[in-house]
Length: 225
Ligand code: CA
Image (cartoon, rainbow, N blue to C red):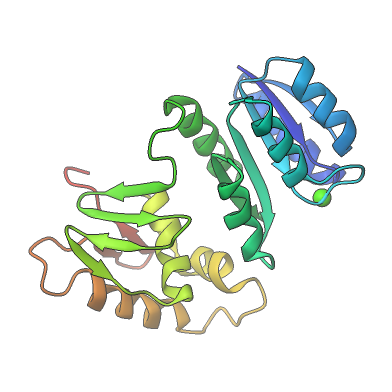
C-alpha cells in the first residue's frame, strides 16, 4: 500500500514515516503544499495523510482541489486541537477522517486501515457501536431511536471511545485528548464527565456500553469482547 504523508514539521513527518514503514507501507513524505498537490495528482496513492497548515498551499485547499478533480483517494487530515472548525470543514470538503495532533501511531494505522477498508462514499462520517451512533460532522448522537444531547466536552470524550471500541483508555489519555496536556493529572474531570455520559447514554438501557476497567480507565464495550 502506497501512502503520501504531507507534513512540514520534520519530527512529526519522520515519526509517521518510520511508523508506517515498520507496518510495511510504502511511504512518500512531502513538506510543501504545492509539491504535495503535484505528487497527489501524478501518482496513485492508496491513502493521503494531510496536514492542514503547510507552506505553499494549505491542506484544505489541496483536498478541495483533489475532490473537484474527482480524485477519490482516501484522505486523513491532521488537525490541531485548537482549531475544531478545521475538521468539520475538512469532512465537508470530502476528507474521510481526521486525527488530532498529538496522536498515537497505532491510531493513525487504525484510521488508514479503516478508510481503505470502507468502500468510498458509504456512511463515512458515522461511527457505530452496538445501537449507539455518533455523527462526526453534525455531532448528533443516537442510541437506537433516541436522540441524545451532549455538550461539546462530552462528545469529545465519547468520540475516542467510540472510534476504538473495546480498547481501554486511561484517565490520562482521555484527559490529554479532550482537555490537553496542561491539566493536573489528579483532576476528576474525566470521571465527572463519564458519569454524565453514562446518565445520558446508559441509564434506562438494558445494555450498559460505557465500562469502567478497574484501576485502568474506561472503554466502550462491544458485545462479545
Ligand atoms: Ca504544519
